[in-house]
Image 1 (cartoon, rainbow over the protein chains, first blue to last red):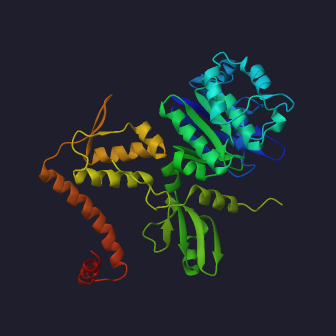
Image 2: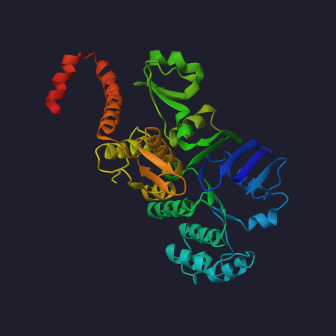
Amino acid sequence: MLALDVRNLSKQYPNFQLRNVSFQLEQGYIMGFIGANGAGKTTTIKSIMNMIHTEGGEVHILGKNMAEHEIELKQEIGCAFGGIEFYTRSRIRTLTDAIKKFYTHWDDAVYRSYLSRFKLDETKKIAELSTGMKVKYSLALALSHGAKLLILDEPTSGLDPVARDDLLDLFQELVAGGEISILFSTHITSDLEKCADFITFIADGQIVKSAEKEEFKESYRLLNGDESQLSEVKDRMISYKVNSFGFTGLIRARDFDPSSSIKAATPSLEEIMIYFAKKEPAYV
Amino acid sequence: MNVSISSTSEKPIYQQLFEQISAQILKGELGSGYVLPPIRQAAQELRVSIITVKKAWEELERCGLINTVTGKGCFVAEFSPGEMLHLRNEMVLKQMERDISYYKSFGLTLEEVMELLKKIY
């Protein structure tokens, strides 16, 4: 079954548009949602959650249409946004008591276990929490009502390496049962190299590619050669840079002849993102 | 079962898993009937994606090294010493092919390669 099925989402802003965004996430897997700042990650996530009005497209969650079953489906979704601001003067305990009333399957024991795992003190006021602590608190809220689909926007941002590692561990723990699925956006690609099963890459409001991680990386080649070899591939490259040692650049695997003498390697997710970003002139 | 994964290696992780486990099976360290951990559990413990483990297990099955029994798990297959030798040689040859093409790219002759191999073996 598909945990999440996004079809042709479109959204028009004065200076930005989301164009026909489509991708699918199978139940029980982790999908990393990557893209540069301003590529449309958060807009896509907000569209999925029906938090902004879209001009076109459909979202199906766990087999049901989000537009028709929004309230029911939101019980099944755990959602957390990076940089979210809670009402700062309240204590954690007070806020949680208000929020948990919305969820029919709220589980206090689970919530307590996350508080202790994340070392959160219930009596602290939101204003007293560090950025990382706020992220952890919003995750504790997202994980405590038995959600089957977790949609997390930049959950690892603001966390130190130890906390990030612990969080990725937790993600793998959650999907191990095969019932829970996770979509999380990030630009820290090292978080995904290990634990993500699928990668969806968005650039400039359009999905560049959504595929299984290894297949995703292998559909590109990172080339390395001297300047005389550049002319051979120049017009088919996504982007490249030239220096006194030669050139390096990214090309689609299908545009590259493997018998060529140019040195080719499988790029990392980060390299793919970087070379795509170079494709278009920088914003001025 | 011993597995160590390098995330900096050029080799895809499923390939590393496959190579290390197949070597242990063919050396007889993992005897026939040995139960491999379930895919999702292995992924969690190894800190790799589920699909990575799935691919490695599938590759092992395709090579006839393990059998999957639905609902029970993956078991190391049973083979005669002859079959084991055959499978082992097949894998070693595959690796040798890759190595030889590397030596050839330096223009080395077979004699020169043998000479160098003897030095470090």
